[in-house]
Amino acid sequence: MILTVTLNAALDATWSVDSLRPRTSHRVDDAQERAGGKGINVARVLGGLGHDPVATGLVGGDTGRRILDELNSARLRSEFVEVAGESRRTLAVVSRDDGDATVFNGRGPAVSAAEWQLFHRRYAALAAAARVVVLSGSAPPGLPADAYAQLVRTAAAAGALTVLDTSGPDLLRALGARPDVVKPNAEEIAAATGQADPARAAAALRSLGARTVVASAGADGLHAVTPEGTWRAVPPERLAGNPTGAGDACVAAIAAGLDAGSAWPDILRTAVALSAAAVPCPVAGEVDTTVFRRLLPRVVVEAVPPAPAR
Amino acid sequence: MILTVTLNAALDATWSVDSLRPRTSHRVDDAQERAGGKGINVARVLGGLGHDPVATGLVGGDTGRRILDELNSARLRSEFVEVAGESRRTLAVVSRDDGDATVFNGRGPAVSAAEWQLFHRRYAALAAAARVVVLSGSAPPGLPADAYAQLVRTAAAAGALTVLDTSGPDLLRALGARPDVVKPNAEEIAAATGQADPARAAAALRSLGARTVVASAGADGLHAVTPEGTWRAVPPERLAGNPTGAGDACVAAIAAGLDAGSAWPDILRTAVALSAAAVPCPVAGEVDTTVFRRLLPRVVVEAVPPAPAR
Image (cartoon, rainbow over all chains, first blue to last red; front, side):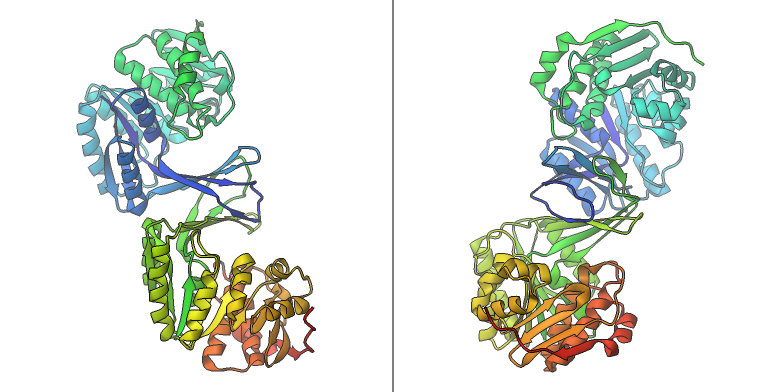
């Protein structure tokens, strides 16, 4: 079983307007809401691939109840812990004139020490039944600074593999717990390591404790540094659309590959095709399976010599 | 008693961002939600003036329940009818760099014929106990084209005075029912009549059935054409801030004046001062009572000869 963790689950709204013009009023013609947060998006993609993942994390208030209702409607197994604060909302305002999205992200509820302990106990029980644990996204206010490190250690002690997709201090503080895979994008890896070169940056993250680093660079594909070797995987074509969900699709492919015990070149090939297949979809958590099947055999995966750690 | 009607009640959110930059992501630091819609804002202002208004209208879904909870917290008497659809949300994104707001307005739930009839019956009973009925804002989808005309006639038949603050086709279609007061702003009156000159535009609305027209022109004050005479009322100074709630404060002053049987020059003086006192407040439905008391004696009200109907 694959367990996905979303510590800062959200109710994601998408609003359509003719054209976004700052300092004016807009009529919203089409408003949609769904449960979101990176871990939930990963669980959706896994569900679409035929897996039966369990989604856990923290939700709260009326917004949290709507998140749970929506997960239930989407037939995703959820084991969230409810907190007293109100879950955050996110809003993507999509302009019909150019298709571009302007995004607003709430911060999320303050979580108390008792709520964190309650979650950690529930999580430990779930992780004991999981082969792979996916830890995705930002942490809400109030959590211990080493929250992700704690979750990585608990999963490892239970025998599960961990995939961590977060950024900034949350990422750096978790590396000492030795996550099996981290998946920063180009911007996140540069911010975390101060290295613009992905090979050097990946080596830096490994020297801090990550066992495998899969660095994503959008349409330029993936650069993966693993204990078994280093590979670059490149999509065969560029697709137009919404790249928001590509990272979550990539993480879903990594988790599915670890769950199946696949070799890294195969995992990376699937991850590149699945990421690209998310781009034509309007919301994160969806992939275009026709695009996936078309691209999969054409992804180029090549072994590259590892860069030295600095 | 003053009854306010909000056919398309909303949950109004205000989100603070550093600076609104289209096509980028923003961190929302301060999110506030409250019940809104023009009629609810009028009720809030009346409550602040010491009146005990009743707020009615249509709400639905989880968002509707949050609207009712919030009205309850604000100690406003509410007699809303619940519909199956989901009440709309509105969002004001306020940039901290310049204080400007970018506003998004949802359309509101589709209302069925049965729901409209249920509301109309509840409304008729409430109007029978009211001296003044305030009808404010847009109508949600699905209502009869003459919904406001029906409500004006029902109130008049019950012996209540009516104040109508809406725009476009909703305004024009209601005039034949002879509302006692309509309060378009400069833009609305120009759009409805094709007349840029407020005196001529007011005469046009009166020729279509409105008994009194109070045309608001922001910092230029009010131009009122009534059966007792025509007046212009001008604020003594311009205030910086958020003009969103000024129109609702103006309507509240008109309703309170009609309820008290005040003369039009006195009503207009109060309406101008109360509108101006709403501008320094960050959200609609609030007025700065210190500003109101300071401005009230300095508002200039002068009789002007009525313009001929065209």
